[in-house]
Image: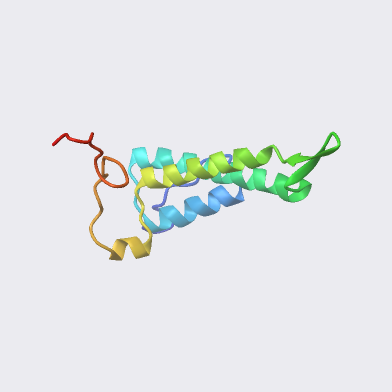
Length: 122
């Protein structure tokens, strides 16, 4: 895909989101529904960058009463990192290492040790 064929980044994206948009759309051709996921990923990247900048500036812990407490942005960072990981999986773009491995695995239902059964049942 040439530079002119690539979709332009949505308005309002900041540096991190725009960089991810450019890199991803340069390497992959995405369908309309995947473009929606891409936009959400880029917005999440920008939000993560902003939250991380706040924590970097203010510190991981803040004074609180007679002691300290964790910065309130930390749980938000964690939640948005989880969301970003889920969006990446939903987009279905595998890394180069994953492309070279075996065919995609199907989702496995059941516990970590297989399907649980009651004692005595077959």
